[in-house]
Image 1 (cartoon, rainbow, N blue to C red):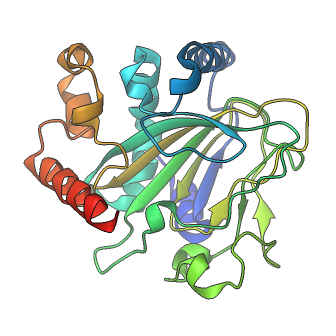
Image 2 (image 1 turned 30 degrees about the vertical axis):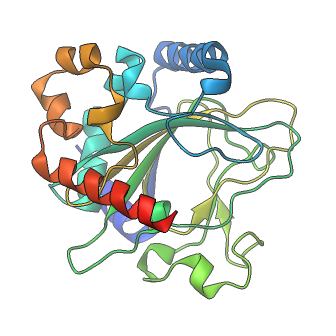
Amino acid sequence: MLNAEEQRRLDEDGFLILPDFIAPERLATLRERTIALFNSLGEQAGAEFKPEPYTDRLANLVNYDELFQQVVAEPKLLAGARQVLGPEFKLSSLNARSPHPYAAWSQPLHCDTGALPDEQGNKVCNVFWMLDDFTPENGAPRYVPGSHRFGQLPQDVLADAAATHPAEQLITGRAGTVVIMNAHLWHGGTANRTGNPRWALHSFYCRRDQPQQQYQKKLLRPEVQAQLSSALRALLALDDPLNDELSTQTTRMSGFLK
């Protein structure tokens, strides 16, 4: 599903921009549903995941609507995840994020889940769906070119990972654009200096031997799990004993660290 040039750009640049990937009607429906869900959940919005300062969030979106189930299973985007992670991968989470208007908060440069590649290759891949325009003023993500090959975490080598990096650039685009990113790339959302929200969906995938960011088997309602196709069940690792064990180990370690 990716042509040779798209594969090359994803490998070399660490990300691939797909302009106008989301059809206008689908874009409008996704944006409307995302905002309505956020408003309806109130203080529970994003409770399945960690909070972020000055940011509206949703988490565990597969649990809420078939629309979001379609998002995580989009064939070309799965091909992109496969290009980054190899053939054995799974959904780690599907979240939504919008930095607050007029907020000074910017994310520090980071690699998702603090992961580094190992001898088996890359561990994480993030796909973000622009539900609004991404501009230099409204919180477009920054990145450091080539950093997916550094083999280092920014917080380990930078004096201040929240500071502006001399080589950083922005990923911008029109609403409807989708970006496939090797999530070992040093990146972070910037401040939204406008008066409007800037929503995006983040479909996050990991290698099969890594724990899910959000353990889908526990978080998805039984009636949602029951109606999923076999392909979706496999993508969400619902019947995977290894995934269950990884989740148990992660929970134990989390408790130990506390």
